[in-house]
Image (tube, rainbow, N blue to C red):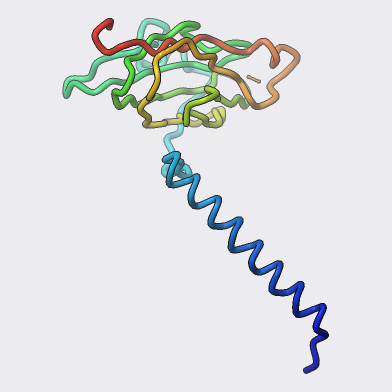
Length: 162
Ligand code: CUA
């Protein structure tokens, strides 16, 4: 089979580009500790407030019996609850979040915390925040007219101040 020189050149160029792009993706996925989602936990979004874990009194940061930390939150049009959370820096935290209505997304810029919050399922992210400061928890899935105003505060504080 005859392949024209120019055609051959472009086959090699596209192959090299593909390998380079896959390499960049892998580098950042490993370097930033980004994982694809795994497993799923269903929950009845219409009865979140009646569930033990996502009841109003149980939201926020909690210390588990084994000393680990869990942050429980609810996403609902148009806010995240609790609306301000404080977490310690450089400490592993399990974040569990559920939607009370429609599809939302959570994203904290400059951290690796980002996930979709699909109604009917619990989203769980394990992360360690590396820098102290005031961050914004943003909704990044269009969820209605108030989507632009759906955000809350995440304060990452020194370990000793909690
Ligand atoms: Cu919630 Cu957009």
